[in-house]
Amino acid sequence: MRDSVKVVAKLSGTAVIRWIVVFVPGMILSILCFFIAIFLISNNSGSGFSGAGHSDPLGATLGLIVLFSEDFWVMLLLTLSLIVFPVVYFIVANKLAIQSAIYSVWENKMQGWFSDKISSYSDKVLNKKN
Image (cartoon, rainbow, N blue to C red):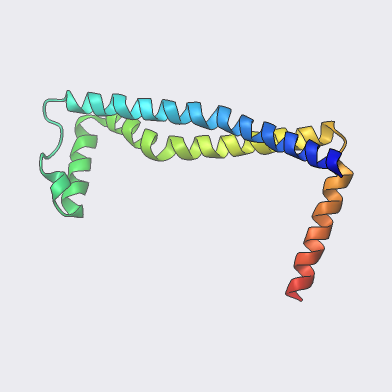
């Protein structure tokens, strides 16, 4: 029993390390892109409406539309670095962590132990609902 717990802890540790190795540099890159976009927008001579951030949502939306029309690529970089990149890094990090955990289980020939645990837990859950 202790050997299997040690192996599971080792597998979990490698999966977490793999997740951190993918997600943290991705977020650093995303933050770097965000600051580059902010710097490029601040150097623009006519960047948006000056009071758009202090108005209602309609004024802020109009300010964003003006910024997109004046500096499309900079605003695209800003939007991607705030919304898209963190989600993509999170999904890719989860995929790689799960992939490395499954490969390590396969490599250590622990399929039987995991399948027994999964079947016992699923039986408990299904019996509780009935």
